[in-house]
Image 1 (cartoon, rainbow, N blue to C red):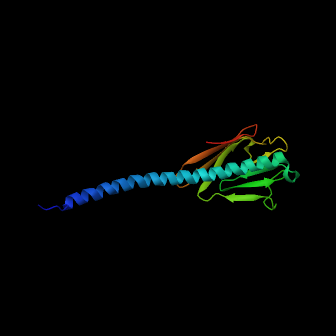
Image 2 (cartoon, rainbow, N blue to C red):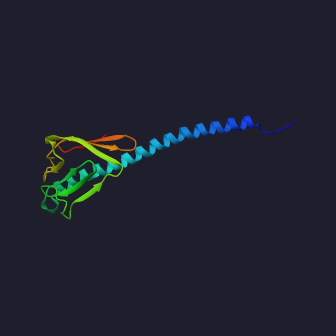
Image 3 (cartoon, rainbow, N blue to C red):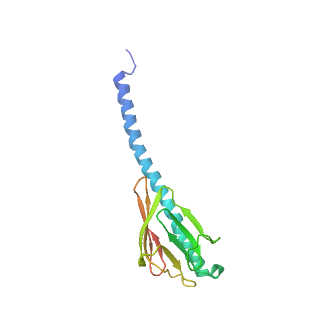
Length: 148
């Protein structure tokens, strides 16, 4: 009695392995993109929260804010965005883009001293350009910042 595998059996096993590998690689790709988006969204929310906290604490005696553009966002201190200010921190969004709907058609949100009230409310949508996945960051009139 011969106990070897036939060519047909080997090909069936290889086909099954390829199908399982293909399915798991799709799941891995989605998980990787979701993780990248969550990390980028968390960094953006942290920057907005930092601006609010710095404004409330009166750091440097100035209000603070965040300026949004399609390819970057920037933390700034003072009453308006100034790229030349040494306190301004610009973050480039490689692989992502921002769009949104802030009240008053502005590109910046300035948080007031002491109360942290935002100068504009609305949403900023962070979009992963390779997968199309997105996260929405909302700033409310009381200064609450959420990500969904």
